[in-house]
Amino acid sequence: MTIRMDTKPERYMKLDNAQKYDTKIKTDGVRSISHFLELRSLKRALADIRGNSVLDAPCGTGRIDLLLHERFTKVVGLDSSEAMLIIYRGKEHIRTGILGDIFRLPFKNDSFDWVVCHRLFHHFNTDELRLSLLKSIAQTARNGVVFYSWVKTPLAHREGSRRVTVNLHHIMKLINEADLVLESVHYAFWPFQPKAILVCRKRST
Image (cartoon, rainbow, N blue to C red; front, side):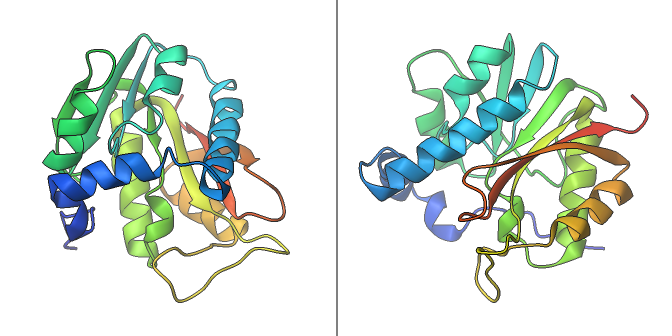
């Protein structure tokens, strides 16, 4: 099976577009409210776990970095875009940002207590890619993974776009195939938004 290495749209490979992206996630209005709800659900999810180290993959420009630093002693970011990493490394405090492919992570097994994968899973529209992603991050995690997904709700579902909602029972099947166990789901704004944070523990732990 061949997995495409480039997990970022081409536009995010350019520095000026990465800078625009970093500015966009901080804007006021509806996007700011959505971002707040998203981070609140992630904060609830992180309260459920224990550990000292975390891999943020993909880290982008550091959308969730400050929240991770509140919870973990060691935070490492990985991204497939050097442009994103330039901004990530240049933020308020010293950041460790590594260029790499999330499907072939450059770390030994169990290198981090947890791996957080924020805002990537929902871009994949095939189970092959979704499962490959879960297996890759699970292999690098000692305890488990936390990942962001768009989950179908009675009032929120989307098909045929670059962001795809997936039935929770179907996601649970993929989680099981990745040798993970779903522990909790934290919705950003149930049932009006599909955004959700899923906490999964490794089956062998």
